[in-house]
Length: 175
Length: 267
Image (cartoon, rainbow over all chains, first blue to last red; front, side):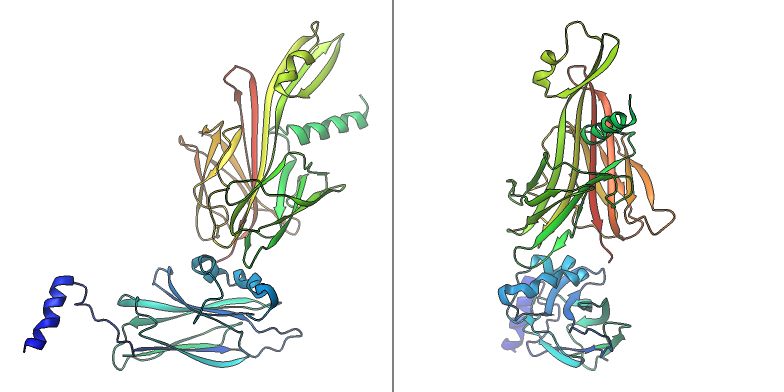
């Protein structure tokens, strides 16, 4: 019983610990579909994934897929084309960033998983997972999918579909 | 007066003083205003024309051109050249932040009659007394200032370049000039010689008007604090213009103009 008392005392002192925190092993899994387009000149899109509050303010950038291999970091020239992400988050970041930047992806479905440890600062609440794609000689599209954090057991995956530059985006969480 | 001379004088007046009622618009059009990557470049066109942003009248003179970097210090303008209808120059944004590009001109203008003929003179205030002949009549003197600006940002917007000089008509951003989107209102403050300019009409014009019969064009007014608010009807490159006529501290007629180009991006 002594062991039981310690956490409740701690919660009373901080007042914050009473809120359910996500376990480090909790998961936010995102599936991003990059559509195959039949266009004369195709370049893989730049894609940014970030977490937003319902009022669309950015909380955390999860991933930025861009041309990381070009000499002199020249690939960063077009990061601003992911306009919403750039304005909300990108322009204040230093890229490349470990665990965030990665190379562009080919058409198809890409599964990325972020752990509770990676999202440790995320306050409990309702969020959107935002995905923005911008393609050279192409268009730009943003898709948002809601999720709540920390994950509840048996939470159903949510998904949304882009119309041009993005295919199906689905988000699933588990505690 | 021959048509050629009249045209020449009109052109000089348009370039040098451009009173408010003058239809011709002085503008700077940057190739981009929001940039990413290391040490990006922008190229800028400068011209005086009616239709925005098509250079089809006179090139902007680059004499009074300056670029201020994020730390508030001047930045070298490169590859400047002046053609028939437009001037063009490049700017490299070597450090992240906001740059202000401004073309400011000013001085005294006088007109007087001498031997039945109307004469005009333009120059610095210090030279004014010596420039007007003693037997001149109907001497009219005015102080003129004009400022044409635009803003570009590499990375996150900053405010170090936005400080005003306190001379003539100027704009002090409240909303950052490189953080404009069509869905959000923007607020700016207009200042005359560093003090709020109240009750001044500000004209807002959307560029790229050649392919539409009517361009969004409207006027807003500054409040008692010099602040005005703009709700952009759609994304695009906008030009704003304001002017203030009055008397300066010494009682000399003054005519100050301000114009700026803003890029408003889609969401």
